[in-house]
Length: 404
Image (cartoon, rainbow, N blue to C red; front, side, top):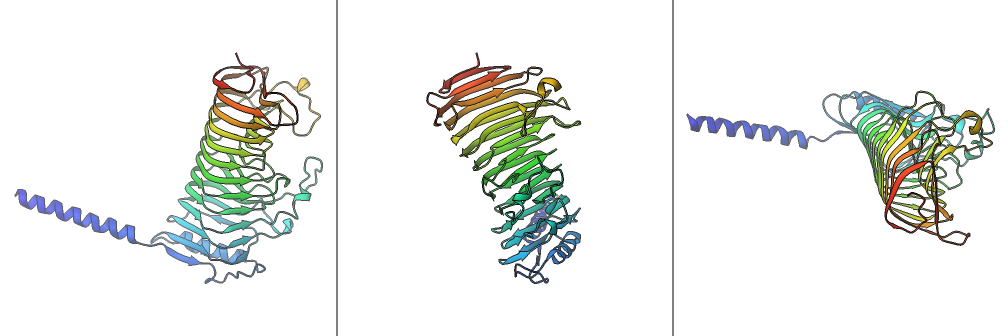
């Protein structure tokens, strides 16, 4: 009887192994855009071919799908890829996707947009060419209320358990990669590039997101390398090279009503090279919302000739004059920040600037082994400025210590 039971168990395990092996060996159905009518001539708009192919791949029920973009230049007007899809879907880009040079030819906020999708994978050696040069002179909204709305390169909204790997984003009209209400997403091996004087070309921008992991990524733009906005939590950033650009910024925060807390951020093993800022938190001096920024760890960060290596600015005002004296101080509470092993060179004598709110002072700020040297035109050792900060220092402090 025992031998029969044993034989039955072996049979069941064998059948299970065969099922698992057969599943793992099933390859996704490949939808090659070229074989389905897309023309890699850099002129023909392939938007309809791409979206039609997406609908077919997304609706397939019998297994996963792969959309493949081979080498070549595929001109693409504004496109949206919308789910939910029946199964996991891959988007492999080995060619170049070319945006219209005229910004008016993209009649949506984002050139390539993914919405309401789970288990999406974007990868390949290809390039997203935003052709932003013609658009950058039009980006004057701070002084021109009739400025045109320029499109971001690629956006993700309500996308979960997904990833983007190895793609290059070049010369976006506005931001490169935009994330809204995205959860459990990996970004790795990505290259993002635009000239340092290209306005508002943020590298990666995210709001209302959670569990985003960014690693082994190179970003050089005319704005924030990474911008972290309202409602973003549990963000891990490692091995990122940033420059040119405005650093990795939290905010700006507090300008609008209904904003949400930002918490649980880790940035480690990262290099800022020639940026205007390195570590940056910015909140509007007159806040419309009361939120908390908390549980941040910055560790093993190298600064190479950064203008403001460590910068907490709770009197943020990009286009003065501002009137915080009449409107009140920032109501954004910053607390529980640890900055450890931050080293390198500063282009300003003030290498550490902690300018916190008088109404809501920064709390529990730890500075550990801050080794920043002044490499600017003003002589003397690097210094620090602290306003309305409760915290502590330990380890080696090369810059002047302004915390007791």
